[in-house]
Length: 557
Picture (cartoon, rainbow, N blue to C red):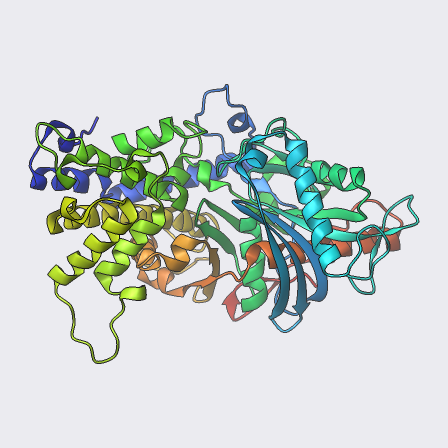
């Protein structure tokens, strides 16, 4: 196993060389990781895997590749007003989304804090809070939830066996679930610091609906959508189409458009018989839990061991914003504790550094901004380019403030060592993120891996057309050079011709707009059932039409 010379008191150059070796991933390793990704995608499409939700079983990889039962991708012409509830982190949001039909939308929203007690307490308490938040939002907006309302316009849902109409709501639930229908999904495992009791194995839509019913709130959860699926749908709506949605933020995940015939786990279901295409939620944060392909360091092992879900969500722990700061904290501490002579800060630490999760990924981003002259460190027009020494002084100031250390304890040499360590950690995350995007492109026939000697795009799906990818998350949006490094690695993996056609764009409020679009699908399902007198959804109601000029799939109409 690789080791860190800092732990043995090596010279500064030695520790930097060691860190560089441990955190730098060569091209051949990236190809190997991408190949493993492809294998696990195929495994996930063929069988339902719930082992990762059962925390007592061996955590070797068992892919999710979860069918979402969303069979349409919008093209921007859709209209309507819909209610959405978004749960995925520190805050929950209640949104009212109005789709304008011209690739634009308007949004009214309210955020509500999710306390640690709610995250780790009884699940019924958590979902009662969700229901109360929706009720508060509707009350504040003068849309009573305990009597008839016309929020959704001319087609409010009528609850079966009830005289009172209800408000349809789509739930964006940013945790691994195994969906069996558009409005049903069983929680496989908690992530992102959540561990509410008696939730795993339960239908989250039913949990929410039971909370509404207990409180006599006339709201019905009609659709369940993952935030990654929402990113795909949102980007498709605002750009005219999309084939992959990806989150690179606090966590990471991807959803893509798959041919139903390849989702063999659907068996002889109605969805399988209908054919066509369906969005698949990969839950790729759980990729390679066995770590057979991922290049693990002692720092990664420590972060994993001390997490709330050891040996699970392996890929996420290498690349997501929730963990990069913690990896950096462990690297910094190892250099503070080096013996016989410390490498950093004269051996001095702080409460912030000594506390688990005490170092946020935002610090890494700020250090990068200070070095690159971005953000608040940007030069004003006509300013003289600053020297490297001045850049290090900027970083020194950031460290004094963020790490709560005395200025004499942080030398310019210390600032440079921390900068290099943070850059290595973030660069590894960006390069690994590219393997996920490349694997989806290759799997869907839109690219070939270049290590296999393919230099031409001839015969590829959507040859010569642009490939729509919607992304969301703080890393890809705000971290300096993250997307640039991701694209450079993607170019190496699939070649410059394919990479140049990959249109990566921010998904505007995927968790809100995407949920609204799923509510639209549910609305059409309900209309079809009432019109046809049938309970089963006519999957052909939302066919996907291919556009000729770009590699997009559309629409929900």
